[in-house]
Image (tube, rainbow, N blue to C red; front, side, top):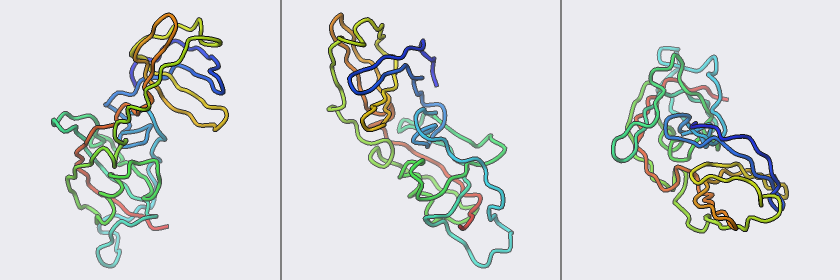
Length: 206
């Protein structure tokens, strides 16, 4: 997703920071992720054999529920109608388990209750996607110690690993001065609302 910046590894207080590919809006969505191509986030599972599909002999209309493994085709757009992701041209649908946090909550909510071969269009607000934009996640740190001589570039994204919590986050560099660097730890898709057209093609019960 985007150009990969030159590889560096430096320690920042209790953690480390490494350049990370920037996520653009063209792939791996709706992952929180590989993800809505995200970067950022766990990849969705590969296609699962044995998913129940229309005509399989299942009695009555089966609907998707938490714990089910579902397969879907989808198209996602921003509020202005710009297409940012679709798997419609893929030979196999995207497969994931409802209740698995690898997929944004709004997408899971939309699929829950759908039946096989049902298709619908839903609007997903930011708080059910990648979260509302949080200005407190913008930080300015002094360029001292391990990062004193690192060349940061505004607009690039870096991965920060906090060794104390083992958490990894992606930050975008906003500003660089000789003595400080300012970064934004919001997800690149934070604050954005989305529209998805979803077709459920299969349901597999645990």
